[in-house]
Image 1: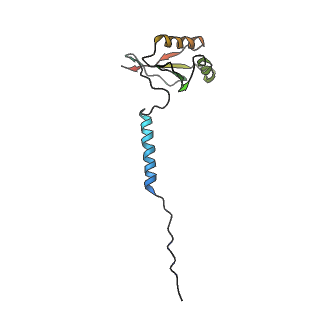
Image 2 (image 1 turned 45 degrees about the horizontal axis):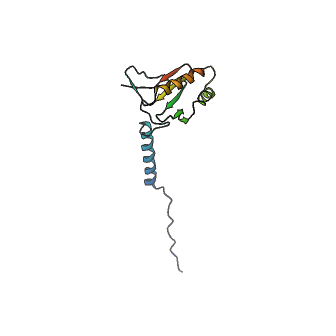
Image 3 (image 1 turned 90 degrees about the vertical axis):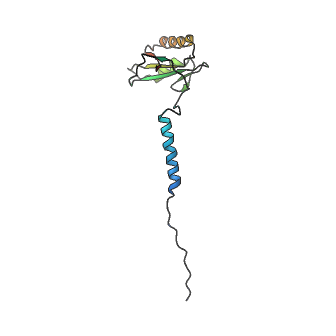
Length: 135
């Protein structure tokens, strides 16, 4: 009687090297984001320095970014001056005071900064702060 050799069945196994590569990539990405090497949102600005700069407490806030090229962003979204107050009123929670932090590049004209702050005050927003870095 003849017997045929049956091929050995290969067991399924998980390849570890590609999984380790993916995990290392994710780890590096999250470290770079947490160290602000990769900006999370908005345009890059160079804040003016102030010796009396204070750390802000957590609160209901909106970040308004003014760029050198006339760019205007509200929480990372491009915005026009005319649409600024309606957008802020839409995101404002009832019975809470929204603090607006103006993140302006140091190359922005003072006239433009005053125009934006005047528009905010005319829209009913009285709590406006200017972001600076500690010198």
